[in-house]
Length: 454
Image (cartoon, rainbow, N blue to C red; front, side, top):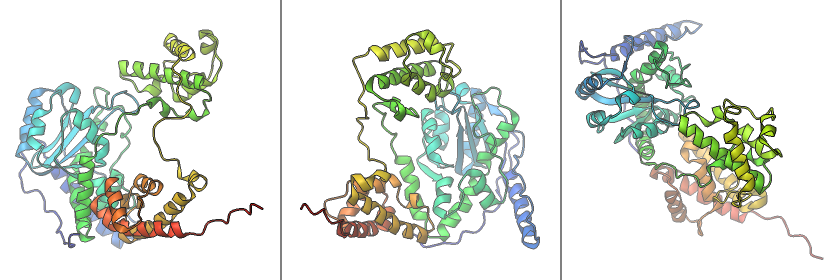
């Protein structure tokens, strides 16, 4: 654990603005000065004033050609310090999770908005900034689509995760900007269809501010972590985000259908599976979010209903969705395949999983006692560290350990088990003894007396 240090406030960027390069760090400094002024007046006013809104220095524009991209890369190469990075997708609109806009900001360089479909190859950008510290907010959301572009940081500072570890009550970017910089950051376009072209100016303003203020936020979060003696553990967490592998593909992804629990019997499950596969293939083909074509509820209804013909399917009023009628032949073919197949799915998934904790008291009472005891002790530790319990130790890690504990409950065995489950060294140090204590106590808790056989 590092010793708490005092970090002085960041001084204004000494690098002069280049005529050919947007230098929006000046806007951040100006907005920050306004925020500090507002904060001062708030201290002497009985009613706190409305926070000043964050604004970019100039109207942002999208770079969608190789020449502009290469000029921006050179400007970013000439900048200094960490690099703020963000990406916008079209989740809920498109099948893919590709990035439709990549935003990059660096002090001494300015802010740049890149159009990935138009630019294509981002190799030069990776070469220019790949070895620098990248600052992202909720990095695990954006890293997959950045990696699709071969954009891969070697060092990371995650402001969302850092805010959690620093004890902030709200960790969305807008809330963190308010807490650390005293600025209002509008977030109304977070769920927009970023595959839209051209992108509206208001969306671009939203996008550029997401990176333009991020380095100032990073500095304030780092200062709080340092003063709380948490910077070393935060660095372990950031490294773990980078090192976390992509989750393996599900053997039966169709089982993620919402409401599937209402589908009874292998034949009905086969119909649901074939409808899911048909929808997934068509959604991939036209790059549209599957749920926009045919909602999960429509698949479940069709699987639960005895349908004798395509006309019956067309007459099912609860079978809805943008493609529910235009692709009726496709859906009926899937239903017929499900009704005819000999490859019937199991009633329950074959994937190994731990049952929900609400069922533990009946299915595994001692595991239930281990979990309840460990959670209570860990909550005390989390409160003492001013951390959310899930950041002290992930719920999945704790559940797996409680359900499949080591043979021995001594400290070393618990530490080894935690490490094998992916807990970071600081988490092992903070939690192992409490978990060992809870496990021992759970094993010694008196059981209900067995019924008298007589």
